[in-house]
Length: 262
Image (cartoon, rainbow, N blue to C red):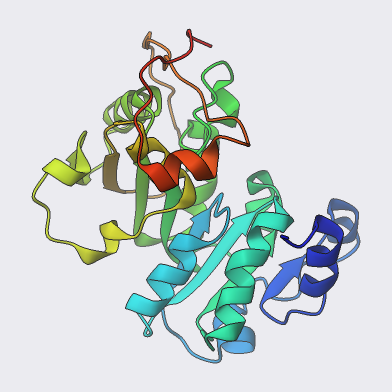
């Protein structure tokens, strides 16, 4: 039987690779590792890469294995999920992987300007009704651009056609440079082992026959960010129910009848 949440939280409290500060704590004093991740935690000056909304940490762990000369930090508010990646890192002695449990809106409290080299956004909630909550909205891009180095890169990997079209429109509106763009990753013939890392949710979407979209773009600091004025059709499906997830992924089945639009 899987460990319950309270047990996982108790274990993570003792993990040296997991950090958590409440909003109230951050109001009293700055996060101790801010601006010092390389020197104080990783003990090197290697590039720092973030995975936002890391879930179980598949990308954080996978990338840490591929690139021992880079440091990876997964961020998410879901501690019970994060436990999986944090535990994996400890068991496999991945000293270049760490995790921060917090809301993404709090990101500026944990990193100094220009401290981050790259950001991965993997299968985020597209937030079709709330622009300000989309992880590629101008609200968030403004924050990312401050934390990223001058040549900092953002990667978006998503099943959502809505999120993909919206992000492309945001990129075009703000005249950002695109390094790679595909609306069907596994038919794009791109030779990149990194993109073969599959998260729990990616396997879910692939089992339903959905295309995986991927965009890689530069995110320079800008004085002004502008939201695109565009109407986008909402995605016509939603996540599996809790009891359907593992079975559908295991079987590799495709949904024959998708729910109505949200």
